[in-house]
Image 1 (cartoon, chains in turn cyan, yellow):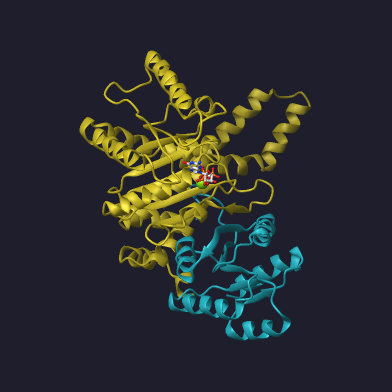
Image 2 (cartoon, helix red, strand yellow):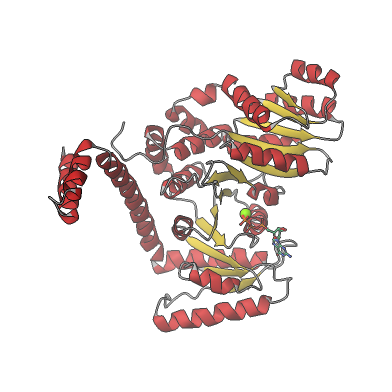
Length: 141
Length: 325
Ligand SMILES: Nc1nc2c(ncn2[C@@H]2O[C@H](COP(=O)(O)OP(=O)(O)OP(=O)(O)O)[C@@H](O)[C@H]2O)c(=O)[nH]1
Ligand SMILES: [Mg+2]
């Protein structure tokens, strides 16, 4: 190009993350903090709110053309919910990283990684770690 | 993976075939701008022009997304599949954004195609990306296409005003209607909705609007054959939503019967051309101002050898020259 008629800036399109919780988990304080951290790092966070299903998250990620899905979990259901999410993503041929955050015991972290979760973040993960790991996961996809 | 690297031509073909992932990807290309966005625009244009475009605007928190969710449900019941472009502001500091409109649309996000759009700071960017995104959604068969914007920034108001039917949402109390007037929303409204009508002060808000409309009647802003209705809704339980849908339909028929649709279509095309040119001139201007020649002119003005007016005129001549070759 550039005839000067192009719209917008092509460089540095922000990373878009669909951020949500899965299942009947009613806490949203942690996820709002994460949303702000990602926004402050220049990302676009599509916040879905609480009580989503794997299908509704996949539908949103498709429509939003998300670069990653972030799932916050605080109800100890991560060992079933995270794999269920991965399965739904695979069925929809959504080849984007799944990032999981929440209170996840050390022992489970490895199993989640083995199952295909791109990043597992503990509740106290510092902002830089959150941002850098999402960036790295998106870049690797 | 393959989708990420697919050329726009393939994506358009797949999107026209009903592949939602391709639609999502096309919207990303449109938003990014540049050569791909232009390719998408020219490939989708021949298929577009069928969808009715509805703009929904109003002050922050007025209940626009909640109302949109209800409208979408009603539209689906009536047998078409709508799309929604939900615009939220980007942070001017970091360029990031928290796009939260989907939270209120959770009931319908599996049926309608909903896309959250950040304003992305770039002046005029939204004014180009929203028409482009609307064209994609229209081309692949969504109808109507609903655009939700916060009625504060000029660009947001302009984008919504470029819709076929513009709905302005106000709420009871705090002089919301008066604020809407100040923000220039009254002139662009085809339909008024007093949302949160379950709250005290709803009839006051309605009266405020009626008074201001009376006033606009006096100043002759109003179309003779169409008077914007004022409707009351409670978007939490859906009260009044059917009336909004039928008002949109009535307005749509008015556009067709009165020939006003052609006027609006032309206005929308003009708006898009104008924005493309403004952006092009902005870019050219920025480039020109960054050149050494500009610095030299500034030096001469600073030294008292040249007037500011003459310096600007010389630059203008140089820019005109550069556009012609
Ligand atoms: N009482 C009452 N509350 C409502 C109504 N409609 C929406 N709300 C509430 O108002 C708040 C804001 O609603 P939204 O739909 O997010 O408003 P919005 O105009 O889209 O907000 P922004 O996009 O942030 O400008 C939410 O808490 C809704 O539940 C209504 O008719 N009555
Ligand atoms: Mg909203």
